[in-house]
Image (cartoon, rainbow, N blue to C red):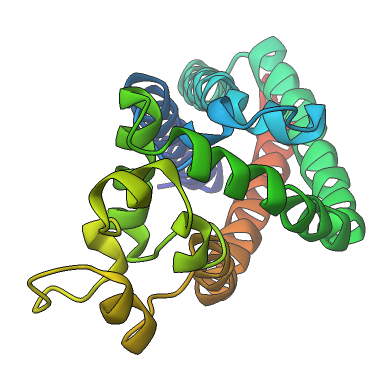
Length: 243
């Protein structure tokens, strides 16, 4: 196999990985939109939620768009390498370069505004607590969303069990949601939640992000390295085509 053939194989491998990554992101975006009861579902039920926070509910559409775009880019790169089409190779290089620049810009923005996002989620806590007191157990969709969220994160309320104290649900049943107590507790009453309190969902969500921060950073660096390698190979093939 000559040098050009090796580069074509590497180009095919790189773009195959990009295509698979796009397909995975697309599947995740579809799942987020189809699964109405999701971790982000409670945002739809917060009264007077800040516009910035409400935009998080559109993350499914963003994932779908990114997934479709990456899948098309991977397909374009594979076709350009196999057919030795200069136009397709150049288009692939320009598109991947734009994606790389956008990713770098997004990383900088996230780094700068990370404290602002944390403060935004903290400030909305009082509104969430008020919604839990007024709506939990009263509105079926709101209750289902919060039950699902608390089950997935093994948490209770937004801050802790006190979000349900004096709520409509506790006033009527004298009980707290089952997820606020350990599995071996038969009756989830006030004594149970006070003796063995569960973590609030806000802190549980923060912990989940922190625990996976290294993994997310590794994936981001890997994708960036893959894009740089793909751009380099595409430019070499672009120069060699027709020689």
